[in-house]
Length: 378
Image (cartoon, rainbow, N blue to C red; front, side, top):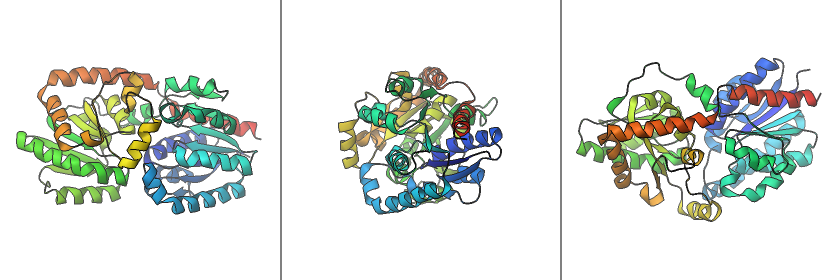
């Protein structure tokens, strides 16, 4: 018997990382049975019966989650019933801490024999270190993507290993040999969540309009994370009367990051992807004001961008809330367009920071950890 694994991811980035882990796990344990919830990539690997829910589950911010509380409660109860019926040896929780940490607690209470592995650790180092002891009591192992995370969990008594960032493998597969950069092409990356796109992409389109007035030769591309988002983004471009300026593509973010001269990127995993490919960019972050003020009370970090946190320095410019508007964003992009020297210097710093993500093989190392718990549960 090869064992049973239940896995939960709630966002597109977690879906991509989870699919890589599952592919590696199936290569190591070909007969393992997989159930759970994630996105289209994980569903393609796991097969029939796997719940594809990320387009609805990937809400961001306290206020947005509260508005959808009933929907989340229904999914929570359904998935807990699935775990009780499926009886996995291992529960793999992928990022998505608002849901997954509560789910971990419920599974520990109702199915205490299930071993729990957390992949892509919650960013408690940013918002709530006091939760670490509770996580140590719930979880059996933490798999960290960043080297600075390991001591935080290990010192609390939780078995922890740094497996490296799966982006290294995923992005290397998308590298274009001898890719050339277009000095007049700017990338617009509004994020993978529908609410992020609604909040940030109109600003990016207006920024493109203003920059085009400054330099008519500039071109703008915006990759959409899903077909549904592509349709939404094209509607925003049309509403902004920018069809001749901004091209929305179905996917292609990694390819654009290797062709553009610079870009503006929503805070999140895409900022690490840009660093890996050496794309100079500015970061934008905007949420509902209640969410922002609640976050200010919890988060005690000098920077919010993952690249800046990883580097321990302000490598890229961060434009937050009221600064995430066409004026400041356009000024930041204009500086990068005007100065090849500034772009080159930033590219070097981004590549140096990306080296801290670890070498190839993160999926295999994470899958090996899950396989060890499967073997232990037999």
